[in-house]
Length: 161
Length: 290
Image (cartoon, rainbow over all chains, first blue to last red; front, side):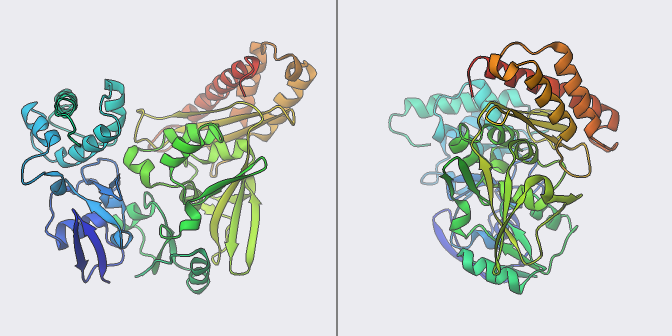
């Protein structure tokens, strides 16, 4: 089937999509957007987190056909004028990226958190990231990165996460 | 496989009639896992996320009509005061990403004994609204679950809504899992005080082939509260009563050993959760909080 959707602001017609395939598969294998990672395929790990109409979702659990007519934003769509987003920059500087596999999902989920709540406390950060598993970097550095991103976004007056 | 994506409720019912073997899809948090892992290959997927009517909720007198497509995130954000037990359960579902997509209607359609919506819906005395091109009917929630992952809906029907009375008293929910997020419950329990009817509602999760009420425990506690005049006095509950209630809830379950826990632990934890939720709910009732 053909799926017509908007990804990172660009309209796409994607052909030959299998009716049972996930949005994640379509993004990675048919649209050349491998930023969202494929790990558990059951919504447990969060490494495929993307925005669907402004709400974070696991792309592995969204049927490709459910993206028809909807707006998807992936980690690739968060950069601003080819510059890393402050959340992305904070993850690098805080040492919150080791193997990097969980990072795209954590970036999208952190982006959403700071958009809704610019000053989260640690409990709120942990709750927001509860569905994103990291198996090597360690959550302490990730929490550091979220705090750093929150600070940076707060000091840049008028900056939108 | 076909992908059917109606955009109106009338179309959805017509499509359902033509494709009784299609698998209904909303948040995908169960269905897509089965497809990703090659555990299920339905001849068609019937995507209901485009049907706007399903994503509304409304109040008619003291009955809340929750559209089958309302997500957990919206239950938490919009219905915390209106359906407190269900909102408590919704907060324990998966992760933010899962709650943004998963729906109460989908939880009912999957009818897993471990679904988090079931205990509060059983305790609250909900009804499930089922619709087909022939018409609409409602099924009391305790008659809805007919077996492991089986429910009373016919192949030509879709779940349109869940009807729940606004609570007349405090509600509680408790769930045992290995961590606070991303867990399928080992066991779960929902409790509702119905002071207007001087009745207790219960719901057991993950401890029987289907979600079920602890009917005998409900009537035991309701009569005991009545005999002791506690509905009126709102006085302290005797410890012996909360313990006896816990034991009777335990007696209503018939769990199995599986990867998430043993039957013995499920029984023990149910007795504890029943006692605790009753204590919490009664503290609210005694304090005048409904």
